[in-house]
Image (cartoon, rainbow, N blue to C red; front, side, top):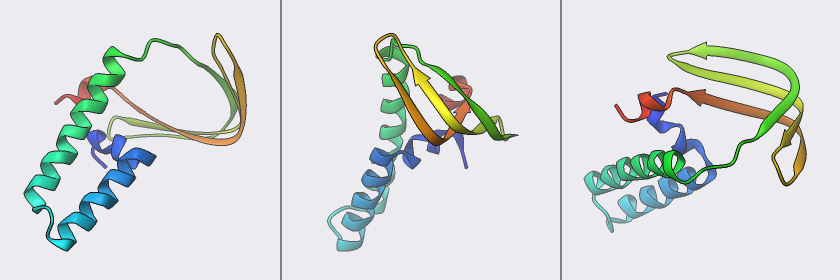
Length: 106
């Protein structure tokens, strides 16, 4: 998986991909235009995360699995606690995928 495809595996990315696929199959949209839309989505997500996200979160939990492959870290935590300035949330199992943001803009 290329690092720029990380956003496409999010809920909004998967919904966008499904919608574009349906539009291409019905002939409403050309495949080239669908690829351009996905490329712009990747750029927009990267820019938004770099410029608009200001809060920090602390994550604690039991590390079940970790992996580093193709400059991408994958962590699976069990009984994770997400905490920021305002609130905290317990999650039974969470998968975190992280990579160097500089790789996303290449």
